[in-house]
Amino acid sequence: MISLVVLFKWYRTTHDSQKQQQAFWLLLAFSVSIVLGTASEMLAKNMLSYKIPSIAPILILIPVMAFA
Image (cartoon, rainbow, N blue to C red; front, side, top):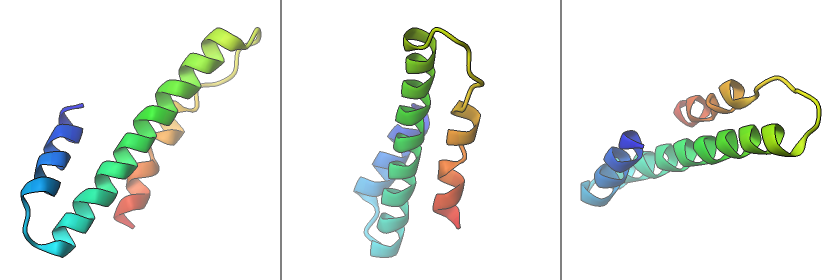
């Protein structure tokens, strides 16, 4: 969560448009991975009667794609 705050602050305070765009995409990627990882774990644990492997470690790789 601290990384989201730092990225948001960087996005708001930078004046370089290229760095602002980088901050935006990183902020979006981290937010999506946190939301999807949390939702998938909660849904899998509470809604399904059988156990499935955790996919949160795979979803946390989403920000890596933002760097590519």
